[in-house]
Length: 231
Ligand code: SAH
Image 1: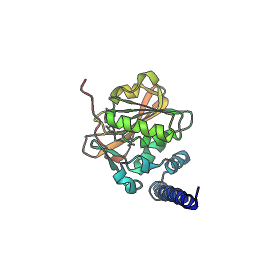
Image 2: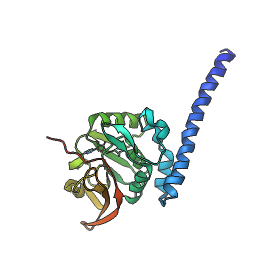
Image 3: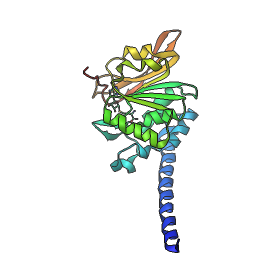
Image 4: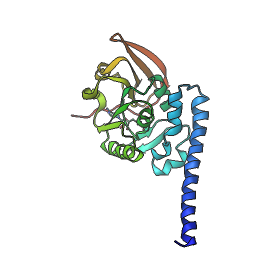
């Protein structure tokens, strides 16, 4: 190998490291200014938000906005949620390492990845086949072997893998789908935006205790609509 090639290789490697460092620094800043400074205190959630490379979950044209304080378009009229909302929803479901989670609305796969950093297994359902395929490829590439995804209408949950300790719905429904409540484990926690699509919705937390459901109203949010497949 001659010296030119060595120098060229080192330059390419160096640029890659600088890129990685750039996003790493942005991510650490994002977690401080948007997550911990706003009151998120669950250590597992904070560590997961520091680790998951959000810039690899957004379309190329938004890569420099990946750590901004807002949602971003991911195609097909859908969005990846604002980082704070992802952290908030993760914290309220009290994730720990032995838990099994279900997410409805995979989208980019970012919320699933944040959860997968903490819990044992994440099952996730996405109604738009293209987004389901893209996120599946992303999980594979990034080594998220504990995320199991499928394409379909998540209204009926995933009975074959229920009950779930955690259910996160990332699309707004007028009413909470009953099958999801039924698939919640004892002491399980379900978080879902409830309200009219296109309007401000209320984020609700349901907790199953002794078979009964406790409902808590958390905050106001704006999510894309929960859709139903026609069949
Ligand atoms: N959790 C995602 C957010 C995606 S936006 C992320 O981290 O990027 C919500 C997603 O829910 C959209 O991709 C939308 O297609 C999907 N969705 C809407 N209704 C659905 C349904 N009934 N079943 C499954 N996915 C649904």
